[in-house]
Image 1 (cartoon, rainbow, N blue to C red):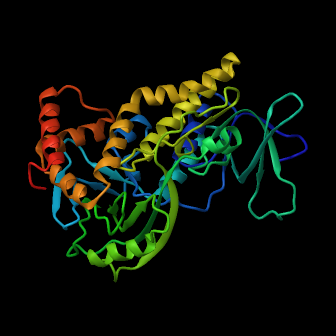
Image 2 (cartoon, rainbow, N blue to C red):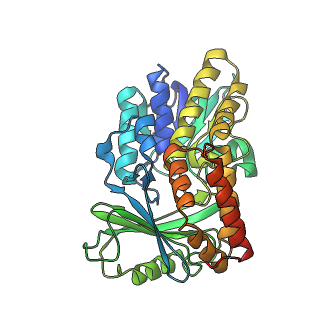
Image 3 (cartoon, rainbow, N blue to C red):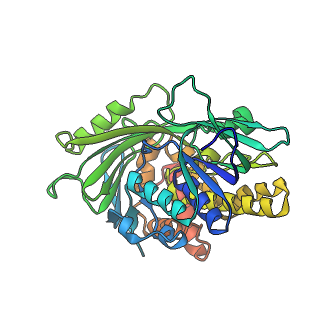
Length: 400
């Protein structure tokens, strides 16, 4: 790519994860000239859980699923387990390295130009057009950066997004949970780990403010923890989780860690020619930590806003990406944020929270909200029953 010519694209998408790859595909399908810039070579630590709705909404083939979990086991601080069978569906599992590369390759097949590179900075030429500067892996550190022009830039470069910092300053750095997991060979069927069940550990010794997990991936298994508490040893916590569940002697294939945002940013765009998506925009669900579906949704919305901004020549329409996302999912994020702040704050409350998960109404509405990605409003009596049960747990009227 010739730097002197400063090749021009309608949109440069920075970051090739689910959000960026989805944005690139959406724009390429609409005839826009797109550059997908991805640093590659690194897999994000992620349990890999996706709802069946993702397969339909984003035309993802079921062949990418490496496992289907049909139940979730919640484990309390006292090691009491509550099993929640998935009602009306399943939790799909994907391996992020394979899944993300498939999404990037689809974008290329639709017409997006793929480029390996690390985003360095964003400047402007004499006409005010955005210049995206990036460094191609393997080039000398003292060599000049590669540069392209962009009419619009989509920043999908993760929780510590350089694009977000470039347009929002410190406001572009959301509070984060730090996640760490180890991919291990799946244990034999006689092991405590079940290949058809997600296991979630609400235990302060494993995570003082989040949870630990064991997620089946077919031939492999993800064992991980997350926390926002600095200084807490995630590696030691995973080691302890593996010891408690009989996974100590299982071969470790790789280890990964990264920050995961806790809430959406208040602003995703600069009102001109840059908009954010995915972790860069903070779209990971509180409490559950689910991010893939929301990342892809935000990527599509950012792409649609970029397409409209290019069509009408008004960068203010970029704000529609966040507005549309929050209109659809903001209430879910708000409810989950309250849940996380209250129920995850102590082992006493975690014990009661896991106890509450035994309730059939809680289980049914939880799975319906997960599978359909919205709060269920059609069952007021069930919501009322849950409210009073929740209140009794808060007041300690019922045992955990």
